[in-house]
Amino acid sequence: MTKYLISFPSEAMVLTDEEFPIVVAESHAVIEEAKAAGVYVFGGGINEEVAPVLVSGDGSVSTGTYPGSVLKGGFTVLEIPTREEAVEWARKIAAACRCAQELREFMYDPAS
Image 1 (cartoon, rainbow, N blue to C red):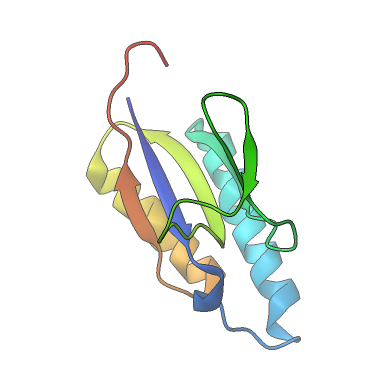
Image 2 (cartoon, rainbow, N blue to C red; image 1 turned 90 degrees about the vertical axis):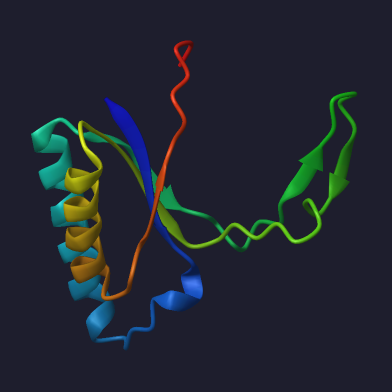
């Protein structure tokens, strides 16, 4: 089966204080549904309060990231037989999160 990344940047989720707990409950319900269906791999949100670092092959660590690299917001990784099913899961997550989701397919790697 193929793994898919379903994600959104943090600025895409615009909620009121009243909406936030509802969205949390509904998005967690979709994750529980994915777990029950056996397609859930991993998910979470990037902690934007902790600055990223760049770790080089020689082990040196520097502040920042690659130029132009931006990774923030929330993501879910699912393992699903077809792209059509991945689109359906992305629709469920988009509805629960109240924002559009980006869908990307991981390349096949027999070692992973």
